[in-house]
Length: 272
Image 1 (cartoon, rainbow, N blue to C red):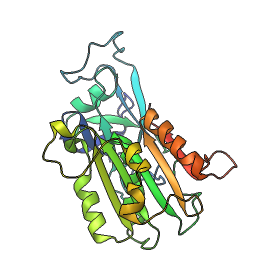
Image 2: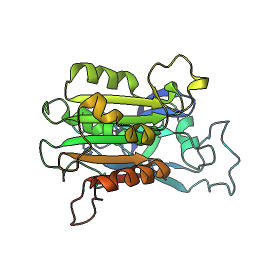
Image 3: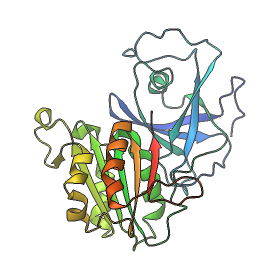
Image 4: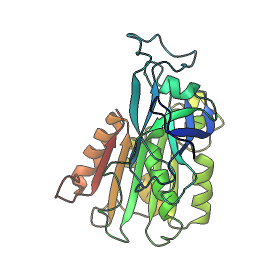
């Protein structure tokens, strides 16, 4: 492995897959061979202010200093047993500082990776056998991909359900992989939905906001998993409006927030 750069870079972009112009899967290989994490945790990526930005990025005001390391936390999407790279699922924020630079980073480009993963958005507090409903908008899907890729291989009893919302079908990252998992694993149900079907007429799946689908009983119908806090834990990741609405739907059913020493049945990771 090469030594860390003087600038602080200690990893390389070992793979990049553009889902579309605004969604990117990045596979980052650290210089150090070991990067341990639990499924659901996040890592920190960084680039210097001198790095190139994609042309569609907004004007940067104020401009980042050339030697300033711009760091942001991103949920890890890869399996925790994957040793070749750490995968991140990133959306382009044209007004942001880091993502316009990450999207411009070429294959083989150097970047900063924080020395360790962090976060409590994991399955550690969930008793074995309890069903898990994972609700996400956009790139909020990332931590669930890590959980599924790590656990679904061996856990054939616990019911897992993913309810994922996006504007268009081409924004449903990992859709092919999740559809394959749903065919192969009888304890896994994948429910994608889009909110702009008039502009995406070829999509044949569910439409509407995922909180609306949840309220209509789509999860129970398709998965057979009841919205019962005695049997189910719910994970929420993504848009704060979605998170708040879903919490309001779940509260009258007896679901409680998981915080600190009080084990609850609703686990939240807000992306902004």
